[in-house]
Every structure is written in structure tokens, then in C-alpha cells.
Image (cartoon, rainbow, N blue to C red; front, side, top):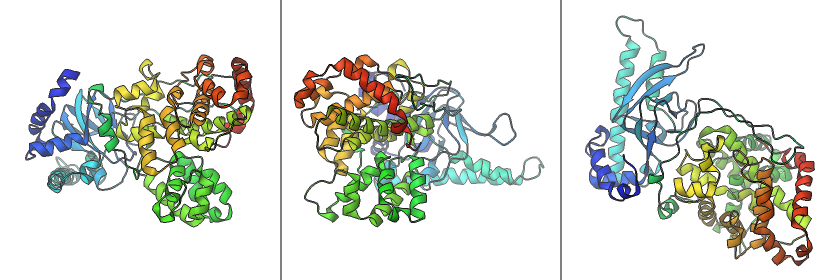
Length: 513
């Protein structure tokens, strides 16, 4: 598992030959192993790294290609976790995630530096039937072995009294989550406050981060594009999902459609699904639907609620940013805040645009949820960002293979979102490249900068007043709104920033996190 570009170009055959020596892959031919490698991901895990965290849910399993990991469980009243078993080269774990969506029941920690293959659900849905049969056969063999071990332990050892709880502990060996990306301590979401000065410092605590993805195993944009599906299950803000579920259960969704629309508009994924439904061939719309209220009128409240129920139910099997709660909350808050600041900028500047600026802002980082599903180790780094993560777009390209703007566009095209949303996703970090819909792009770019200056961003704020002053977006606004040519930009930035401080409570107060 050496790295380097030169080696990477020639090592596919070597990887196949290496896998043939691993017991799990005995009986697999070269074509099947090549197909397997296309839907899996190499992980290099340092010693004592938490690979999998108890009580999390995901749809992936792992094969230990080289190294050793231990399965641990923290019992009530015990200072240290107990070690249930040790897994070595050739063992697999987490395979139950392919057939059922249950929470993991134990931690898995690397005892030594380990090389692991993480397999996505695509191995089942896209592989040929012969490869699927071999995988299921191998799973059954592993599960039968573990069940046999469980029976022996339940029967007791060396005359010990049988302990029924041992069965549950042993079976947990095969039910584990995400390699490389779970913290031992929960990260803390800092209180942004209501009226605070610009660029507040976020609380910093020491947490255990998963290792960054290996740059040498990032995929090409073409392969990543192929993995983006318009019906992919994406995570939903749990707080929004909880309130919506309670509202619909009590019948409030029918009685208070405005509140229903407001709640939908607090979450990027729910907003997309409702708009996607309205633009489906079933409704035969001549013009593309681009707002949640209009989509609700076209689809009908009852059908919208059905879409919401299905989306929320499916999202329970996914976990945003590997369970790093602070990163998830930062993401959802940032999306709403950018949308609201973009609307404020439009109103203050008095510039016209036909696009729904709030939704442009809400959806601008949608591609992060797409890439998070492909590279679950990457965005948790925002919980304690290093220097490499200061330029998020460059880091995404280096570690994953494509930036979140492009990933968002791929998803939005499949969903059928209007063109302004696609342009904002693609160019909100590079407004100078926007040739269509430049005004929405400029306003969301500036809103993104102002939100980050105020601390409403993922990780520590990385932008300052200088970025706000020198953004190319001002030139776009001047070009398309001539009265703004007379405005002193530095003074405008200062006055608008002060206004944000005064109104921060109304901007953030009702965001569900």
C-alpha cells in the first residue's frame, strides 16, 4: 500500500494480486476483484484510531486487508471498555449494514497501523449477479463462524456459568460503522450569541479526528460523477425532521401550510425533494418550478407530506459528517444564514433578480452532502481544521477529486433544479467565472463571506473583512446595477456588517439545530 502518483498508475494489478492472498477473496477472479475495487475505498488507519463508533448507523462494511483491530464495548459503571475480540488480516466487519439498517453495537479501534477496504452499498446494487453471490456466500460463512463462537461462549468456558449477554456482545463483532471517522468525545457547538461582534472565536476542544483521506486514492471527476444519483439518500437536519414529523402526525401540516413551508425551507434536502416532485413528468409543467411554496401548490399538501415522510424515513439510515454533531449543525446553520443574508443584500442594494435568493443560499453547499457520502472522513476535519483545510475547495479537489460546487451541480441537474441554483453552486467561490445568473452568484458569494465573518460557518472562520472588500462580486453588482457604482464599498461593508450584528437574533433565532 505504498503511495505516490507513479505507483498509483501501475498498481491496480498489484492490488488485485494482493487481494487474492487475503482469505476473504479466495475464489474471486481478476474481473470481479477489479469491479470490487471500483466500488470500494482504501483506508490507512493509524494505531489507536477509532474506526467505528457504537450507536451509529451507515450502509457500508469493511474488510481488514492488513493489520489488527480490536472490538470494544463500554459497559455501564466501567471505567474502561471491555475488549470483545480481535480481528486480523482477512476478517470483515460491518457486513450486516448491507442487509439491515440497525445501529452498530460496539466500537472498533485499530490496534496497529491497518489497511482496510470500505465497501459502499453499490457493491450489491451495481455488481454482476455472480459477484453478489460470492459476497453473500462469504458473509454467510463469516456469520456462521461468529454464531458458532457465540454459542460456545454462551455455554460458558472452563466451567463458568453461562452469561446470556455474551451472545449479544459477540455478535456485535460483525456490526460496526464507519472506518476512520468517529470521535471518542463529542464536539461542542459554540454559542454564537444573538448580538455579537464580527468574527467571533469558536470554542476549541481537543477531539479525536479520523485520518484525512489518502490523496493518492482520490477518484477522477468522471468516476465521481457516475456515483451521483438524483435519488440518493442524503441526511436531513434531525431537528427539522422531528418538528415536521410531530406537526404532520398531529394534522398541523394541513391546517398550517405556511408553517409547513417554513420548516421545509430550513433544510436543503427537503426543499430539493419537494421541488423535484413538482418538476417530475407526472405534473407536466411547461416551466420549471423553483420555489417551495409554488411546489406545494402544484403538488398538493397531502402529497408533499408524503414526500416529506418518505425522505425523513430514508434519511434515518444516513448520518451527516460521520456523526460529528458540531460540523452538522454548522452546515445546516450556515445554509440558512447564507440564504437570509443574500436576501438582505438584495433588499439593501435594491437590485432585481428573478431567482429565489434564499433558496440559492440554502442550496449553495448541497454538494458537501454528496461528497460526504463518498468520503466520510473529509468534512469531520472541520471540527478542528488544520492549515490544509483553510481552502476548502482546493482541499476537496486534492483529497476527494472534485469540489462541492461541481458535485452539487451534478445532483441538481439530476433533480431538475432551475439554472440559477446550478450557477450559484458552481461559482459561489469563483464569481468572476459566472457568465449566466451573475447577480445571484454575486449575492450568495457575498452572503457566504459575511456569514463566515460572523462565525456561521463550518469550523473556525477563515475569512476576514479583506475578503469582503476585494470580492469580485462588487464588480458584478456594479455592472448589473448602475446606481451601485456610486456606492463606497468599504463604507457599505462596515455598515452592513454592523446591521448584521444588530439583527443577528432574527437571522439565527428560529434555526432548528
